[in-house]
Image 1: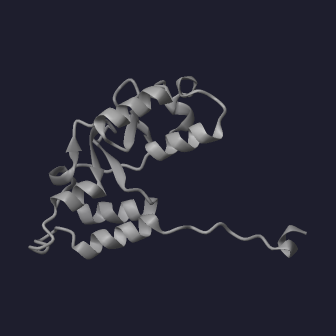
Image 2: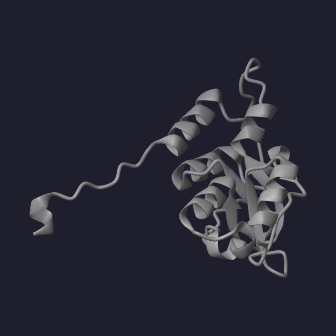
Length: 161
C-alpha cells in the first residue's frame, strides 16, 4: 500500500508569517491538528500543530495575533512521498514520534497529509491485511512508539559537582 492511496489530498497550509490567531482559525474550521508551513514557492519548510500553538500561547505573555507561525513551528519537518510504502512510513512516524506527515513531491512541494487516523479509518481490520497493507499490529506498535514517554535524564548530585 502506498501513501497516495491513504493520504488526504489538497491539505490546508499556512506561511511562516501567518499569526497564531489565523492558524487556530484554520485548524478549527478545517477540523485538523496540523498545518504544513510553506514558503512562497509552496515548499514545506516546517509544520505547526495545535499542541505547538497551545504551548506557545501558554508560555508567552503575548496575544495570538502578535506571534507568527514562524516563531513557533517545528523547523525540521519530517515528510514522506506519495510513492513510499505505508509500512516504511509508519517506521518513520514512530522514529520521529509524530502521527501526521506532510506528503511532498521531489521538490518538497506540498501534495497531501498522511495521518495514522487516515490509515485506521481506511483499513479493513476484519478482512486482514492484503499484500503490502499494514497489519493492525503495525499500526498499534507505531502508536505505542509515538506515545511512549521519553523520561528526562536524571542528573545526580555527583554529576553536578
